[in-house]
Amino acid sequence: SAVISQKPSRDICQRGTSLTIQCQVDSQVTMMFWYRQQPGQSLTLIATANQGSEATYESGFVIDKFPISRPNLTFSTLTVSNMSPEDSSIYLCSVLTGSGRKILHFGNGTRLTVT
Amino acid sequence: KNQVEQSPQSLIILEGKNCTLQCNYTVSPFSNLRWYKQDTGRGPVSLTIMTFSENTKSNGRYTATLDADTKQSSLHITASQLSDSASYICVVSASLTSGTYKYIFGTGTRLKVLA
Image (cartoon, rainbow over all chains, first blue to last red):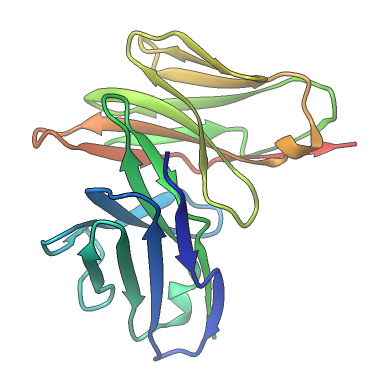
């Protein structure tokens, strides 16, 4: 099991600004994931963050827009840069734990509104 | 194309009643299927995980079934409670040649239980 703390839980930001979301896990994990959940849509993987290496981004997401840091095995940040209203969404941090049948655990998300 | 489709999109039932949620998938190569519960304002929480060889898995009042031949799964909720009001998300994982996994999320069924 894993307890994931995500900050902030919500924010309202002006277009053109940037927001950094923090994700803290109560145990060391190799892989951390960042997802976006838009209203009425399924979760979409933004990138996979491995400690000690650059994040791997999914199609449609780029490092300049969503820079990610992974300084150690329990912490990661996602920055949403130069925001526009289209970035309004819930951003979720996730980790895989366990051996064999791994479980995907999620933080409670950051609800971002861009005005 | 890997896809996970859930039905119905939303459902309203009275407290104490049973209900069944559906999940159809076209994911290859299939690894396992998971059901998650997502309360409003919270991250998804794992309910069940089933591999190819498992037909049914229970977690309290939640029972998931899997038919790997027809690529269908269902989540049955027995004697519903007000606290069951949430979104239920079906997630299918595909094994990649790299040895990692890709998770494909459905859009969820929003369940509301009325007193």
